[in-house]
Length: 412
Image (cartoon, rainbow, N blue to C red; front, top):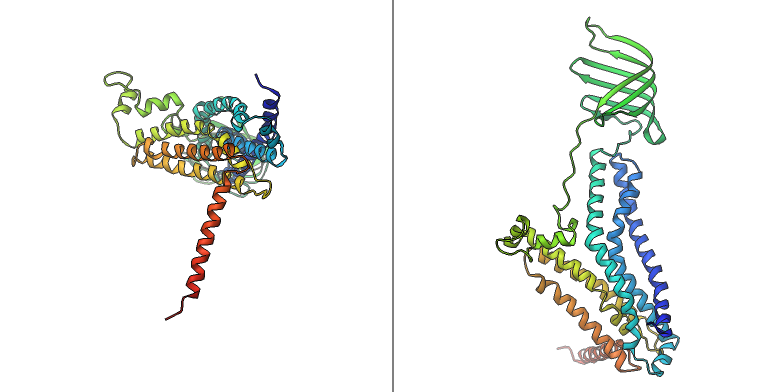
Protein backbone atom coordinates (compact mmCIF):
# COMPACT_ATOMS: atom_id res chain seq x y z
CA UNK A 1 0.00 0.00 0.00
CA UNK A 2 1.23 3.47 -0.84
CA UNK A 3 2.01 5.68 2.11
CA UNK A 4 1.58 9.43 2.22
CA UNK A 5 5.18 10.01 1.12
CA UNK A 6 4.76 7.58 -1.78
CA UNK A 7 1.59 9.29 -3.00
CA UNK A 8 3.28 12.69 -2.73
CA UNK A 9 6.23 11.51 -4.80
CA UNK A 10 3.97 9.95 -7.45
CA UNK A 11 1.98 13.20 -7.72
CA UNK A 12 5.24 15.13 -8.08
CA UNK A 13 6.16 12.94 -11.05
CA UNK A 14 2.71 12.54 -12.66
CA UNK A 15 2.21 16.21 -13.57
CA UNK A 16 5.57 16.77 -15.35
CA UNK A 17 5.26 13.35 -17.01
CA UNK A 18 1.88 14.09 -18.59
CA UNK A 19 2.97 17.56 -19.69
CA UNK A 20 6.27 16.36 -21.15
CA UNK A 21 4.61 13.46 -22.95
CA UNK A 22 1.98 15.67 -24.59
CA UNK A 23 4.55 18.29 -25.63
CA UNK A 24 6.99 15.71 -27.03
CA UNK A 25 4.32 13.91 -29.07
CA UNK A 26 2.87 17.18 -30.38
CA UNK A 27 6.29 18.45 -31.44
CA UNK A 28 7.02 15.22 -33.30
CA UNK A 29 3.62 15.28 -35.00
CA UNK A 30 3.91 18.95 -35.98
CA UNK A 31 7.31 18.35 -37.52
CA UNK A 32 5.95 15.46 -39.58
CA UNK A 33 2.68 17.19 -40.44
CA UNK A 34 4.39 19.80 -42.63
CA UNK A 35 6.22 17.10 -44.56
CA UNK A 36 3.04 15.08 -45.05
CA UNK A 37 1.07 18.07 -46.31
CA UNK A 38 3.85 18.81 -48.79
CA UNK A 39 3.90 15.15 -49.89
CA UNK A 40 0.11 14.90 -50.34
CA UNK A 41 -0.09 18.20 -52.24
CA UNK A 42 2.69 17.12 -54.60
CA UNK A 43 0.89 13.82 -55.23
CA UNK A 44 -2.44 15.64 -55.82
CA UNK A 45 -4.06 13.65 -53.03
CA UNK A 46 -6.85 14.71 -50.65
CA UNK A 47 -5.76 16.71 -47.62
CA UNK A 48 -7.87 14.55 -45.28
CA UNK A 49 -5.43 11.67 -45.63
CA UNK A 50 -2.79 13.69 -43.73
CA UNK A 51 -4.75 13.37 -40.48
CA UNK A 52 -5.13 9.62 -40.96
CA UNK A 53 -1.39 9.27 -41.59
CA UNK A 54 -0.56 11.33 -38.49
CA UNK A 55 -2.91 9.16 -36.43
CA UNK A 56 -1.05 6.04 -37.51
CA UNK A 57 2.31 7.67 -36.69
CA UNK A 58 1.15 8.34 -33.12
CA UNK A 59 2.11 4.86 -31.75
CA UNK A 60 5.66 5.22 -33.06
CA UNK A 61 6.11 8.64 -31.46
CA UNK A 62 4.42 7.44 -28.28
CA UNK A 63 6.92 4.58 -28.00
CA UNK A 64 9.78 7.06 -28.31
CA UNK A 65 8.33 9.70 -25.98
CA UNK A 66 7.21 7.44 -23.09
CA UNK A 67 10.68 6.66 -21.61
CA UNK A 68 11.97 10.17 -22.29
CA UNK A 69 8.97 11.80 -20.60
CA UNK A 70 9.28 9.46 -17.62
CA UNK A 71 12.96 10.31 -17.17
CA UNK A 72 12.44 14.06 -17.47
CA UNK A 73 9.56 13.93 -14.97
CA UNK A 74 11.61 12.00 -12.40
CA UNK A 75 14.61 14.26 -12.97
CA UNK A 76 12.46 17.36 -12.40
CA UNK A 77 10.97 15.83 -9.24
CA UNK A 78 14.43 15.04 -7.85
CA UNK A 79 15.67 18.58 -8.51
CA UNK A 80 12.59 20.16 -6.95
CA UNK A 81 12.81 18.01 -3.82
CA UNK A 82 16.49 18.80 -3.34
CA UNK A 83 16.19 22.53 -4.07
CA UNK A 84 13.30 23.01 -1.64
CA UNK A 85 15.16 21.09 1.13
CA UNK A 86 12.30 18.56 1.24
CA UNK A 87 14.77 15.82 0.39
CA UNK A 88 16.94 16.81 3.37
CA UNK A 89 13.92 16.56 5.69
CA UNK A 90 12.90 13.19 4.21
CA UNK A 91 16.38 11.74 4.57
CA UNK A 92 16.72 13.28 8.04
CA UNK A 93 13.58 11.36 9.05
CA UNK A 94 15.36 8.11 8.24
CA UNK A 95 14.01 7.54 4.72
CA UNK A 96 16.78 6.42 2.39
CA UNK A 97 16.98 7.27 -1.26
CA UNK A 98 16.37 3.59 -2.08
CA UNK A 99 13.10 3.68 -0.17
CA UNK A 100 12.18 6.96 -1.86
CA UNK A 101 12.37 5.61 -5.42
CA UNK A 102 10.45 2.42 -4.60
CA UNK A 103 6.99 3.79 -5.55
CA UNK A 104 8.40 5.00 -8.86
CA UNK A 105 8.96 1.40 -9.91
CA UNK A 106 5.36 0.59 -9.00
CA UNK A 107 4.34 3.31 -11.48
CA UNK A 108 6.87 2.26 -14.11
CA UNK A 109 5.57 -1.31 -14.35
CA UNK A 110 2.24 -0.26 -15.96
CA UNK A 111 4.19 2.12 -18.22
CA UNK A 112 6.45 -0.75 -19.27
CA UNK A 113 3.40 -2.90 -20.04
CA UNK A 114 1.87 -0.08 -22.08
CA UNK A 115 5.15 0.48 -23.92
CA UNK A 116 5.47 -3.25 -24.69
CA UNK A 117 1.92 -3.28 -26.06
CA UNK A 118 2.60 -0.23 -28.23
CA UNK A 119 5.96 -1.30 -29.72
CA UNK A 120 5.07 -4.99 -29.87
CA UNK A 121 1.61 -4.97 -31.43
CA UNK A 122 0.12 -1.52 -32.10
CA UNK A 123 3.13 0.16 -33.71
CA UNK A 124 3.84 -2.56 -36.35
CA UNK A 125 0.24 -2.54 -37.58
CA UNK A 126 0.02 1.26 -37.58
CA UNK A 127 3.31 1.56 -39.50
CA UNK A 128 1.96 -0.82 -42.13
CA UNK A 129 -1.27 1.18 -42.42
CA UNK A 130 0.76 4.40 -42.72
CA UNK A 131 2.83 2.89 -45.53
CA UNK A 132 -0.37 1.72 -47.24
CA UNK A 133 -1.87 5.22 -47.09
CA UNK A 134 1.34 6.66 -48.50
CA UNK A 135 1.25 4.11 -51.32
CA UNK A 136 -2.39 4.90 -52.08
CA UNK A 137 -1.59 8.61 -52.21
CA UNK A 138 1.14 7.95 -54.76
CA UNK A 139 -0.97 5.60 -56.87
CA UNK A 140 -4.08 7.79 -56.84
CA UNK A 141 -6.26 5.21 -55.06
CA UNK A 142 -7.43 7.87 -52.60
CA UNK A 143 -8.88 10.03 -55.34
CA UNK A 144 -6.50 12.59 -56.79
CA UNK A 145 -7.62 16.16 -56.97
CA UNK A 146 -7.52 17.97 -60.30
CA UNK A 147 -5.18 20.93 -60.28
CA UNK A 148 -6.36 24.18 -61.86
CA UNK A 149 -4.72 24.77 -65.23
CA UNK A 150 -3.01 21.35 -65.23
CA UNK A 151 -3.48 18.63 -67.81
CA UNK A 152 -4.40 15.52 -65.84
CA UNK A 153 -4.29 12.04 -67.36
CA UNK A 154 -7.42 10.46 -65.87
CA UNK A 155 -7.08 7.20 -67.77
CA UNK A 156 -5.48 5.82 -70.89
CA UNK A 157 -6.22 8.32 -73.65
CA UNK A 158 -8.33 10.69 -71.49
CA UNK A 159 -6.85 14.11 -70.62
CA UNK A 160 -8.66 16.72 -68.50
CA UNK A 161 -8.00 20.41 -67.90
CA UNK A 162 -10.15 22.68 -65.71
CA UNK A 163 -10.24 26.38 -64.98
CA UNK A 164 -11.55 26.07 -61.41
CA UNK A 165 -12.50 23.55 -58.72
CA UNK A 166 -15.04 23.64 -55.87
CA UNK A 167 -16.02 21.38 -52.96
CA UNK A 168 -12.62 19.78 -52.67
CA UNK A 169 -12.32 18.99 -56.38
CA UNK A 170 -15.73 17.39 -56.89
CA UNK A 171 -17.24 20.33 -58.83
CA UNK A 172 -15.31 21.53 -61.90
CA UNK A 173 -15.67 24.66 -64.03
CA UNK A 174 -14.36 25.66 -67.49
CA UNK A 175 -13.71 22.07 -68.52
CA UNK A 176 -11.63 20.83 -71.43
CA UNK A 177 -11.68 17.07 -72.08
CA UNK A 178 -9.89 15.19 -74.83
CA UNK A 179 -10.20 11.47 -75.50
CA UNK A 180 -8.23 9.28 -77.89
CA UNK A 181 -9.64 5.85 -78.62
CA UNK A 182 -10.14 3.20 -81.27
CA UNK A 183 -13.17 5.09 -82.58
CA UNK A 184 -11.24 8.33 -83.00
CA UNK A 185 -10.51 11.59 -81.25
CA UNK A 186 -13.15 13.57 -79.32
CA UNK A 187 -12.77 17.00 -77.73
CA UNK A 188 -15.36 18.19 -75.20
CA UNK A 189 -15.71 21.59 -73.53
CA UNK A 190 -18.23 22.43 -70.81
CA UNK A 191 -19.04 25.26 -68.44
CA UNK A 192 -19.11 22.99 -65.39
CA UNK A 193 -19.15 19.35 -64.38
CA UNK A 194 -18.91 16.96 -61.46
CA UNK A 195 -17.51 13.56 -60.61
CA UNK A 196 -20.01 10.87 -59.61
CA UNK A 197 -19.40 7.38 -58.30
CA UNK A 198 -20.77 4.31 -60.07
CA UNK A 199 -21.53 0.75 -59.04
CA UNK A 200 -18.26 -0.29 -60.67
CA UNK A 201 -15.25 0.82 -58.61
CA UNK A 202 -13.11 0.85 -61.76
CA UNK A 203 -15.39 3.35 -63.56
CA UNK A 204 -16.04 6.98 -62.59
CA UNK A 205 -18.79 9.13 -64.14
CA UNK A 206 -18.02 12.68 -65.28
CA UNK A 207 -21.29 14.63 -65.73
CA UNK A 208 -20.91 17.72 -67.91
CA UNK A 209 -23.30 20.69 -68.24
CA UNK A 210 -23.67 23.34 -70.96
CA UNK A 211 -21.00 22.11 -73.32
CA UNK A 212 -19.92 21.25 -76.82
CA UNK A 213 -18.57 18.04 -78.30
CA UNK A 214 -16.24 18.08 -81.29
CA UNK A 215 -15.76 14.74 -83.04
CA UNK A 216 -12.64 15.04 -85.18
CA UNK A 217 -13.03 11.62 -86.83
CA UNK A 218 -16.58 11.50 -88.15
CA UNK A 219 -17.68 8.64 -90.38
CA UNK A 220 -17.89 11.07 -93.33
CA UNK A 221 -14.30 12.20 -92.72
CA UNK A 222 -15.33 15.70 -91.60
CA UNK A 223 -15.44 17.02 -88.03
CA UNK A 224 -18.85 17.29 -86.41
CA UNK A 225 -19.97 19.61 -83.59
CA UNK A 226 -22.64 18.82 -81.02
CA UNK A 227 -24.13 21.10 -78.38
CA UNK A 228 -25.59 19.58 -75.22
CA UNK A 229 -27.21 20.65 -71.96
CA UNK A 230 -26.03 17.63 -69.99
CA UNK A 231 -23.89 14.68 -70.89
CA UNK A 232 -22.51 11.76 -68.87
CA UNK A 233 -19.13 10.39 -69.84
CA UNK A 234 -17.99 7.20 -68.05
CA UNK A 235 -14.24 7.01 -67.61
CA UNK A 236 -12.57 3.65 -67.04
CA UNK A 237 -9.87 4.13 -64.45
CA UNK A 238 -6.55 2.32 -64.88
CA UNK A 239 -6.03 -0.67 -62.55
CA UNK A 240 -4.33 0.28 -59.29
CA UNK A 241 -1.53 -1.94 -58.05
CA UNK A 242 -2.31 -3.67 -54.76
CA UNK A 243 -0.16 -2.84 -51.76
CA UNK A 244 2.22 -5.48 -50.46
CA UNK A 245 1.09 -7.75 -47.61
CA UNK A 246 2.10 -6.96 -44.04
CA UNK A 247 5.12 -8.75 -42.61
CA UNK A 248 7.55 -8.29 -45.50
CA UNK A 249 9.46 -5.83 -43.30
CA UNK A 250 10.69 -6.54 -39.78
CA UNK A 251 9.36 -3.31 -38.29
CA UNK A 252 5.84 -4.25 -39.44
CA UNK A 253 5.82 -7.64 -37.68
CA UNK A 254 4.28 -8.07 -34.24
CA UNK A 255 6.36 -9.61 -31.45
CA UNK A 256 5.12 -13.21 -31.97
CA UNK A 257 5.66 -12.89 -35.73
CA UNK A 258 9.09 -11.36 -35.16
CA UNK A 259 10.04 -14.18 -32.80
CA UNK A 260 9.31 -16.72 -35.54
CA UNK A 261 11.40 -14.70 -38.00
CA UNK A 262 14.40 -14.69 -35.65
CA UNK A 263 14.53 -18.48 -35.67
CA UNK A 264 15.30 -18.65 -31.95
CA UNK A 265 12.35 -20.90 -31.17
CA UNK A 266 12.58 -23.09 -34.29
CA UNK A 267 13.48 -26.69 -33.61
CA UNK A 268 15.10 -28.82 -36.28
CA UNK A 269 12.44 -30.73 -38.15
CA UNK A 270 9.61 -29.09 -36.23
CA UNK A 271 7.49 -25.94 -36.50
CA UNK A 272 6.10 -24.24 -39.52
CA UNK A 273 8.06 -23.56 -42.66
CA UNK A 274 8.68 -19.94 -41.78
CA UNK A 275 10.21 -20.80 -38.42
CA UNK A 276 12.33 -23.59 -39.89
CA UNK A 277 13.63 -21.37 -42.66
CA UNK A 278 14.37 -18.56 -40.21
CA UNK A 279 16.13 -20.94 -37.83
CA UNK A 280 18.40 -22.26 -40.56
CA UNK A 281 19.00 -18.94 -42.22
CA UNK A 282 21.87 -16.66 -41.40
CA UNK A 283 21.16 -14.07 -44.06
CA UNK A 284 20.31 -10.37 -43.75
CA UNK A 285 16.60 -11.06 -43.19
CA UNK A 286 17.18 -13.16 -40.08
CA UNK A 287 19.79 -10.77 -38.69
CA UNK A 288 17.48 -7.80 -39.22
CA UNK A 289 14.66 -9.64 -37.44
CA UNK A 290 16.92 -10.42 -34.48
CA UNK A 291 18.10 -6.82 -34.30
CA UNK A 292 14.49 -5.61 -34.30
CA UNK A 293 13.42 -8.12 -31.65
CA UNK A 294 16.26 -7.25 -29.26
CA UNK A 295 15.73 -3.54 -29.84
CA UNK A 296 12.05 -3.77 -28.89
CA UNK A 297 12.90 -5.80 -25.78
CA UNK A 298 15.58 -3.36 -24.69
CA UNK A 299 13.40 -0.33 -25.42
CA UNK A 300 10.94 -1.64 -22.82
CA UNK A 301 13.64 -2.60 -20.31
CA UNK A 302 15.09 0.91 -20.60
CA UNK A 303 12.56 2.09 -18.00
CA UNK A 304 14.25 0.15 -15.18
CA UNK A 305 17.48 2.19 -14.70
CA UNK A 306 15.77 5.55 -15.29
CA UNK A 307 14.71 6.25 -11.64
CA UNK A 308 18.23 5.53 -10.40
CA UNK A 309 19.76 7.75 -13.06
CA UNK A 310 17.22 10.54 -12.50
CA UNK A 311 17.75 10.73 -8.73
CA UNK A 312 21.47 10.09 -9.03
CA UNK A 313 21.95 13.11 -11.30
CA UNK A 314 18.91 15.18 -10.29
CA UNK A 315 19.85 15.74 -6.65
CA UNK A 316 21.83 18.98 -6.53
CA UNK A 317 24.25 20.68 -4.18
CA UNK A 318 22.34 23.76 -3.00
CA UNK A 319 25.57 25.68 -2.55
CA UNK A 320 26.17 25.48 -6.29
CA UNK A 321 22.62 24.96 -7.63
CA UNK A 322 24.04 23.83 -10.94
CA UNK A 323 22.01 22.39 -13.79
CA UNK A 324 24.92 20.30 -15.00
CA UNK A 325 23.43 17.12 -13.54
CA UNK A 326 20.16 17.51 -15.40
CA UNK A 327 22.05 18.34 -18.59
CA UNK A 328 24.28 15.30 -18.18
CA UNK A 329 21.24 13.09 -17.62
CA UNK A 330 19.51 14.28 -20.79
CA UNK A 331 22.72 13.91 -22.79
CA UNK A 332 23.18 10.40 -21.39
CA UNK A 333 19.69 9.29 -22.42
CA UNK A 334 19.99 10.83 -25.90
CA UNK A 335 23.48 9.43 -26.53
CA UNK A 336 22.37 6.02 -25.26
CA UNK A 337 19.46 6.03 -27.72
CA UNK A 338 21.72 6.96 -30.65
CA UNK A 339 24.38 4.38 -29.74
CA UNK A 340 21.69 1.73 -29.36
CA UNK A 341 20.40 2.60 -32.84
CA UNK A 342 23.94 2.17 -34.16
CA UNK A 343 24.17 -1.22 -32.44
CA UNK A 344 20.85 -2.17 -33.98
CA UNK A 345 22.19 -1.33 -37.44
CA UNK A 346 25.36 -3.35 -36.77
CA UNK A 347 23.33 -6.40 -35.79
CA UNK A 348 21.01 -6.01 -38.80
CA UNK A 349 24.04 -5.91 -41.08
CA UNK A 350 25.30 -9.19 -39.61
CA UNK A 351 28.53 -7.70 -38.29
CA UNK A 352 27.98 -8.71 -34.66
CA UNK A 353 25.48 -10.58 -32.51
CA UNK A 354 22.95 -8.66 -30.35
CA UNK A 355 24.72 -9.86 -27.19
CA UNK A 356 27.86 -8.03 -28.30
CA UNK A 357 26.48 -4.95 -30.07
CA UNK A 358 23.38 -4.06 -28.02
CA UNK A 359 23.28 -5.62 -24.58
CA UNK A 360 26.66 -4.22 -23.42
CA UNK A 361 25.28 -0.72 -24.13
CA UNK A 362 22.31 -1.46 -21.89
CA UNK A 363 24.66 -2.83 -19.21
CA UNK A 364 26.73 0.37 -19.42
CA UNK A 365 23.59 2.46 -18.80
CA UNK A 366 22.81 0.32 -15.75
CA UNK A 367 26.39 0.67 -14.47
CA UNK A 368 26.36 4.46 -14.80
CA UNK A 369 22.91 4.73 -13.18
CA UNK A 370 23.93 2.48 -10.25
CA UNK A 371 27.15 4.45 -9.73
CA UNK A 372 25.38 7.81 -9.77
CA UNK A 373 22.65 6.57 -7.42
CA UNK A 374 25.21 5.02 -5.06
CA UNK A 375 27.25 8.21 -4.80
CA UNK A 376 24.18 10.39 -4.23
CA UNK A 377 22.37 7.97 -1.91
CA UNK A 378 25.23 6.70 0.25
CA UNK A 379 27.20 9.94 0.52
CA UNK A 380 24.83 12.65 1.74
CA UNK A 381 25.82 16.11 0.64
CA UNK A 382 27.92 14.81 -2.27
CA UNK A 383 25.85 14.51 -5.48
CA UNK A 384 27.08 12.18 -8.19
CA UNK A 385 28.26 15.10 -10.29
CA UNK A 386 30.64 16.31 -7.56
CA UNK A 387 33.35 13.70 -8.30
CA UNK A 388 33.07 14.49 -12.00
CA UNK A 389 33.36 18.21 -11.34
CA UNK A 390 36.32 17.61 -9.01
CA UNK A 391 38.03 15.43 -11.62
CA UNK A 392 37.37 18.10 -14.23
CA UNK A 393 38.83 20.81 -12.01
CA UNK A 394 41.93 18.73 -11.34
CA UNK A 395 42.36 17.99 -15.02
CA UNK A 396 41.94 21.69 -15.84
CA UNK A 397 44.49 22.67 -13.20
CA UNK A 398 46.96 20.10 -14.53
CA UNK A 399 46.55 21.35 -18.09
CA UNK A 400 46.97 24.94 -16.82
CA UNK A 401 50.25 24.10 -15.11
CA UNK A 402 51.53 22.37 -18.24
CA UNK A 403 50.58 25.39 -20.37
CA UNK A 404 52.41 27.77 -18.01
CA UNK A 405 55.54 25.62 -18.08
CA UNK A 406 55.49 25.55 -21.86
CA UNK A 407 55.20 29.33 -21.98
CA UNK A 408 58.12 29.76 -19.59
CA UNK A 409 60.40 27.43 -21.54
CA UNK A 410 62.91 29.51 -23.55
CA UNK A 411 62.69 29.33 -27.30
CA UNK A 412 65.92 27.93 -28.83
